[in-house]
Image (tube, rainbow, N blue to C red; front, side):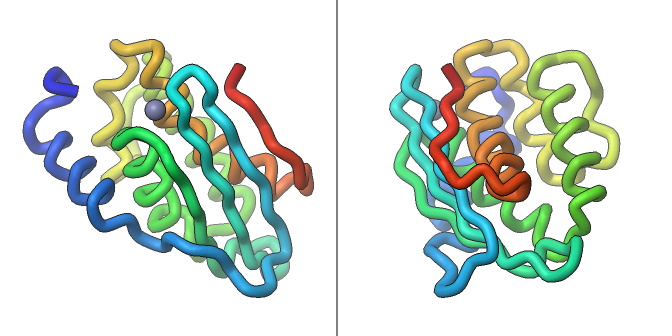
Length: 146
Ligand code: ZN
């Protein structure tokens, strides 16, 4: 984590200590759970989808600072977005953390650009994204990064 840079580390720690959109929606239209056994991160996500828009999202998780901060920042970034916009963000985020793309258009999510140098951390940072994708695709079971 020390190599991620001070500013990035500060934002990640802020979201780790004060996670945004944490909890569970009463009547979600989709949900899924995710598991990253390599690090021990677990997450469950509930979504209220209206038409093709992510109207609301909540998540519950237990895991490392990177996975928790990633879920928190993601929930802020995707709320109100259409499914197509989500897919665009997913692809750009995935490319950034795996080191195949830049951080253009990712705004605050750029704080995770440094994880591309730490392959183990890539799974922590992308767990919430894969889980949300599974939820939106109607796969109501647990996905695993392994
Ligand atoms: Zn982790």
